[in-house]
Image 1 (cartoon, helix red, strand yellow):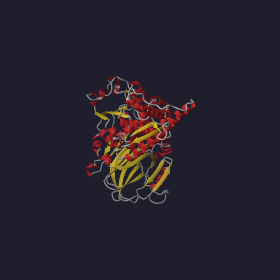
Image 2 (spheres, rainbow, N blue to C red; image 1 turned 90 degrees about the vertical axis):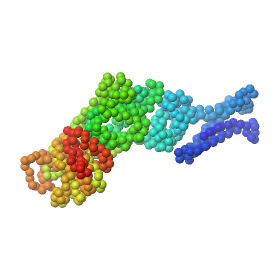
Image 3 (cartoon, rainbow, N blue to C red; image 1 turned 135 degrees about the horizontal axis):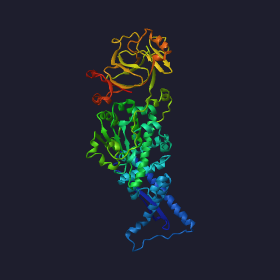
Image 4 (cartoon, one colour; image 1 turned 90 degrees about the horizontal axis):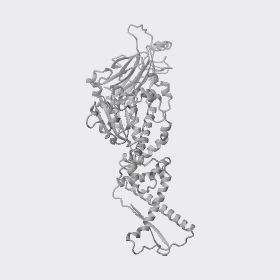
Length: 600
């Protein structure tokens, strides 16, 4: 596209000066967005005419204020180069650009003004590009300018810096429409959740300071800020149970905001554009407890938020000491990571990072952390298990105000002697996966999993009516679904061997279903062998046991049904990684797979 303002004598009166402007646009192909490009060009052309008129009026008013009413016609000197004939139009174009630039800079934040002072609107200064943005083709430079101009005209709020706009353009291969869409969504999200002020307002809870095994550590060989995460030493479940997903997300967002700040700082220190950081993830200690399903779901949600709002901020991800269980985690996580981001992953098993092509290719020897065999002391916390005394109660989970997403909510239940708590899940596809996670908060329980082709009747609120009961107590609900008239082996069958769970234990497990129908998870009061028992009716026993605390147990549980394709590729790894499984079903030959893990 070309726009050329020209001054010439008016055809009706040669003493008048006529300013004319013409434009041409030739679009052969623009990835299906030809009509959009034409509309943008027309808008720019109209804006250029308006700006040219304002500049002409400005200089005419100046002449009038100085008392000048006549300006002799300019004629080129005979010995001037032929190119000097175009001097006047070029000067007018420069004036238009200069005036437009002044307005652009005024509308931008102060910290961006100093970076763009004197930068023309249709072309960025070469030194500015080299210093702050890196290598850009003319097309990329044009996309950046147009997207920035569109934001200045349309967006109400803080305009991001060129470096940040450029990240969104790069994330969409400089497709203007796609980049503008995700950038607008991100700006709305930042405003809604006050992310611009997160570093000033967010205070990390003490449990994060003590048990979150991540932190910034110098920079890599390219000057990128270096973040270290000792994921294998992190108690993911403990952090989620103690803080909730909301707090974890805000902490991760504060890390990303700090990363952006460090990139700007390193850009000034090293004198070249640094727009992303390097992350080093140490998986030493990673085992099956890190595959706790709610924790993986929290990780996936965090990845989703970060991918949408911080594109092209990860320059390189170094994954060290990947154990045998890592492919399972990778199978679950990788589909949620952008393809361009996955290309930046370098994975080292065992001590491979110490050899050629390893860590020394990317990080100077002087700053390799001590826990990786280096000499540099690393201040990243060593982690450990979060004390269960710091876990949030069921009441705190229910009353929490959640704004960034809907959390995984645990249910609380009471289990009485003679009155188990039961949960029913309807399975449509025979190859579905049932997962469970529960904590035994009080007493000892026995966990069962049953299957029935018949649907249990919904429990009645009045426990004295009907064959089923539902009781609400201060310690949680108690729901009984299995009809007293049902016969085990005839009306329903056991698909998991009983699992005895002691007070204070955490249990995670899964079961790959063989048949459709109704699966019933049951927590039963554990009676010691040889202890006295009565044959009171179940409901009567419940009412009596309400007065006897020693006959009451309490559990907090979470269940979920997922498609087996998420687990199908990783079951072999699950069975071969002997890492604390208390029980593993031997029915795999019958296409039914299950596992449970107990941690104390």
